[in-house]
Length: 327
Image 1 (tube, rainbow, N blue to C red):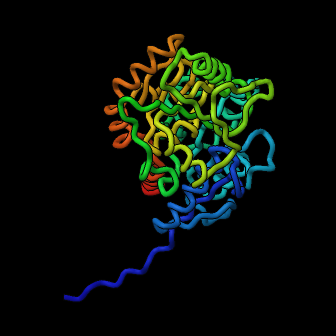
Image 2: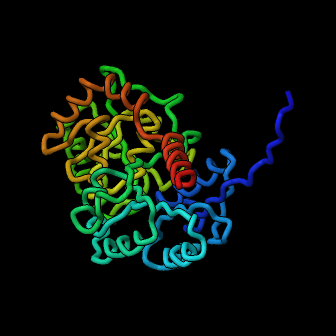
Image 3: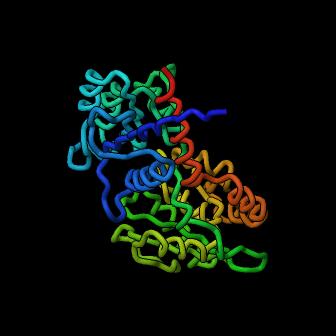
């Protein structure tokens, strides 16, 4: 039997509209680094231009200015006029309520004109925009953010045991009080005044200048392996950051094996907290008692089902395949 000869097809070309930056430039930059590397390993060709050979644009945003973008969504619309097979995925990871602005929602809605499929980083964010401008009948998905599993993993991490101090940790690049610092400061005071025996608090990153920590152990801002190493020395991640569409700090901590202690107004983080943590209200002691009681099961859930970078990348790849291969 003669085996037919098949010409090797040209690789599928995916273009990212966000410029890559070395160093810590937020969740969008982490997403770009992971996605481009993953797709290249899977045989895709990745570029940052809007040339005719592009099969799909993977779009996100970098604020309102053009300095963080390789090209605009208007450029995508113009390219679609010349290349009808071009598809565009818009990843939405922001809103006005988080930023304290009045124009981000409208900006994202305008960009959405170029999108064939919209990805939201949490159900909470999708519902937020659906109440304002997004049409739920349009093709869309929810794909949770994930961190690089080569860096943020649970191996050699601490596991809390009954009778040991329970070590809480939070980490933020921003010193904005909305990142949850009033809650962290109150927690610190409760520990310092002896009302939460057997509890420790670690703070990584930056914080408002008016805060003078009384009991917390503090660390300078860090990222990558250094950050992951500190996280693995702790037992539980605490987050009180308000209105987060899809925050990376709880995801990085969970990938290091830490369950969550979270507040009710943390936006998309609540979706993770319901599965992998305990809600923190006014009763610090009660929430911490629940954490101790359910720690083993929560850690088991975190280890088996929490978001991760490889799962995130695979979800985007499947979506790409569907869009490119469907007429």
